[in-house]
Image (cartoon, rainbow, N blue to C red; front, side, top):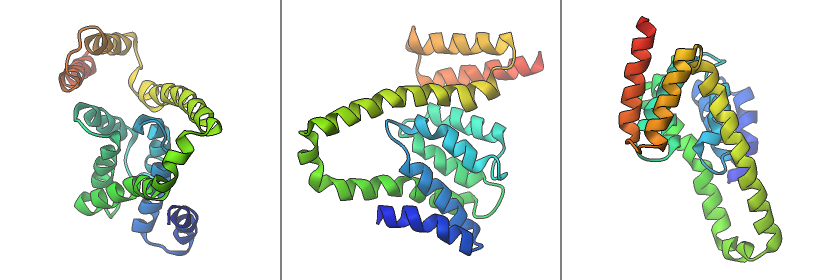
Length: 194
């Protein structure tokens, strides 16, 4: 079912004029490509929702910051994106559609791979592939930090100072993430006034 949807949705998107199909396809494909955490797909998500005008880049980055302040998987960010889209389906319908579409690939892959997982774990080739994929994820995470987060948020030396302060609050003093987001928002608002 995973592979059928992965192949059929882009074709259906070209034939049907439904915005709901387009949204479902976009979020399904993004959910299909995640490995090692939701941060890896940030550039993919941004490429799907910002250029067509579903959300602005500012809305995207603000939603990402808010998603970091709440517990749970980063994929819940899809709920926000679906809700704030400028075209219908948006609101509750868009949020539900984006949520189902981004999580469905994972559920389908788990159901499909579960019977074979214990046999795969023991194979040296599979273990080596996982180690290589995990190493590549580190690079993808750095790329996701740079674009869209760094390129849209760090414009001046004061922006850099705020980012370093918030990083220190998280890394050195273990301040809760929700509080760091609040501090960063307040700091950003103050920098906007300056």
